[in-house]
Length: 294
Image (tube, rainbow, N blue to C red; front, side, top):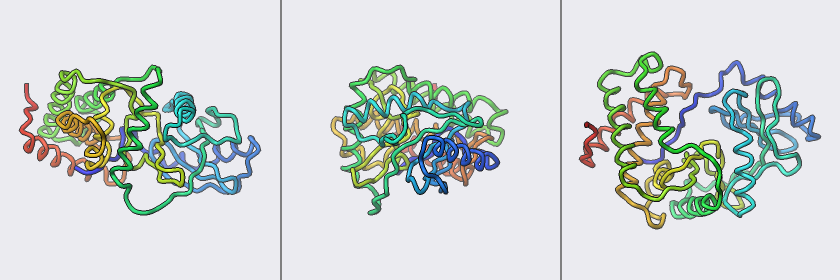
């Protein structure tokens, strides 16, 4: 199946982007940083900007969507324990800043080190380090099944997924329910997870690999995290239950496929991806002989 990308949230509305950029630049300037320009690096549910010349990474989200304070506290505690996470901007107070209906957080900007895809062994080692750091933290977080529940509600709502054909709706509903149950019945060890450690949330820096976007944290088996990474990564992570990982991969694929059929989804080529991924789910179920009925 390869690497999975694309969470449940839509991209920021295009009409909001200029206001979001202005809010970030204004906040950074008011904190004494020199800001003449902002480059959009990434537009998903959050807008990610590089502010220049101060060279700060700003992440901007509408107030209603954000869990910024949670993410900041988690990032600080993980960084203190030496976990491979991106650091907050050291020149300003580490907190969430609000302006004009947006919440802005300020992070260290890392110059990308480009040399193709991340070697799977390095990816696995960094994720293992992150999980080790997370095991030391006791923070209230959702369970991974809460995210599955959101996908199940979306599949069940024809109003929210009007273009989803009946047979595909049944496939997604059955897959989400049966994989959730199968994973739960294994009763394996659970811990704090990143939630979506796909390649888009891994930075290749001079400081090594660093994970970003901790707002998706949840509790569950480490295999749920590994299901978001390229397949080869799971071969280098110690102690993986390969059957559980297979089930988690199918579950995650069903979840991100469901998001693509949300009528509010703004991902470019979202419907096309949703159609391709439905075929991948059918192929994966055929290959594993897993029964999604009952």
